[in-house]
Length: 155
Image (tube, rainbow, N blue to C red; front, side):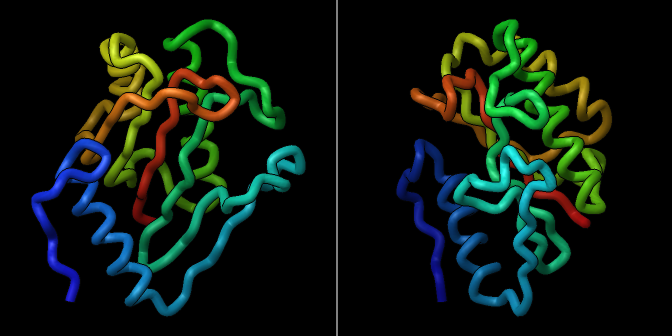
């Protein structure tokens, strides 16, 4: 049996709980569907866009790339925050879920001083009940992005 600890992983005990949950899902999952991007420009990346398993749709971390490209949306943290949320919304809908079904998000942000600006955008996409959320500062996000967001949703 896996037992939670109070040791810090990635700066929070919450991350430990998520890691344990991931291991539990992996150990108990009988069928996982690995979903690749429909976009040819993104199909060469070494990960699945999402994985559907046991009533959940687990998205890989999303950066604010413009659809169909590896180009980051211009315009700073606000524009990038909108783009990352639009990317998440599109992936969820493509695979039979929605923003209303998101239960957990993890936010990686390049500069924690941008946190208030990110939050102003984030709440526009979750006007009702808010998903559980973790966040941490991360230096060197893919393609120079200012923010990356990973989500888990019911499907």
